[in-house]
Length: 145
Image (tube, rainbow, N blue to C red; front, side):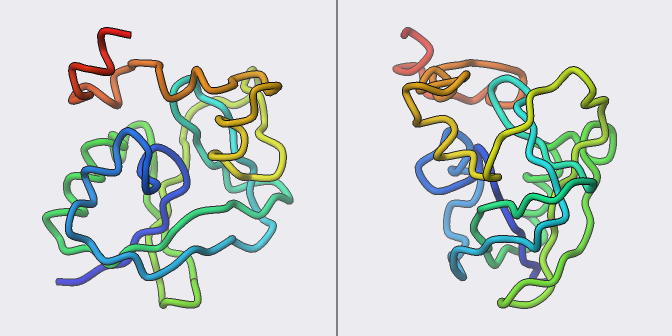
């Protein structure tokens, strides 16, 4: 069965967990409607359903096996929930953070890449160099840093 997934953090092209989408066709970039908030959860972001920010990401066509890999990464349904959203490419899954966000920093503009790359931001480029439970299979060359 074919699915679509909207990704907005470490699954984006060029990010540490993008390998889980290997072989999945990129349907295109997309920005959600301004109904969410993107939070800094440390080495990765999480989207909460409440808010007024449009989230920047990419939509991929994936098979059920790939969806299973994403569910494992996102610790669905314990840590993240998976909900359908309408995109220009059809209905896609988005992973929504289920944890408490009261003490989490909101990412202005809803763009993880811009936030992680901005040398003046709170997280700066160090985001890509942070190891955590969600990127266990990180290449060894990056672990040594």
